[in-house]
Length: 144
Image 1: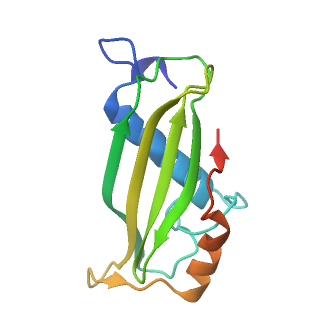
Image 2: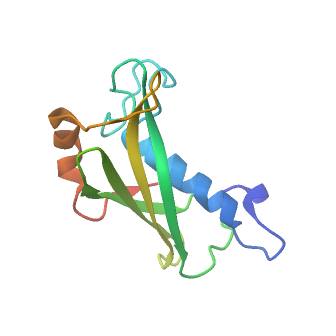
Image 3: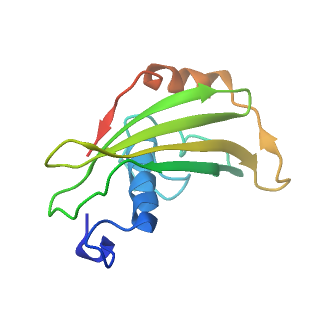
């Protein structure tokens, strides 16, 4: 967490919560193709292991703020796992915990799909992509 993530009430702003979810998603599944450092592999290479011209896009976020996430000078703890995997999309579930008290502060879901950059059409998940997701369908997988 950064000092500038706080809002006027002294807790982490809701916009910054979405950024924390994004950072956890990229730490677990990799950055979009071409954006990562050479030789740096995430635990599950999903977003950077797609064909050229494929975009990994967030379709929807659902966020439930259970309690305020107070500013701490240590990283928040994010647990994440894969939820529903459909033919052309999948869900990533998150729990953001206070790094000191370990209390749940945020429960969220991101619905994602792969899209053909040229046509804008949603692409079906390949068997290989589904296989990469399968081990992570059980909760939780902590990402600091």
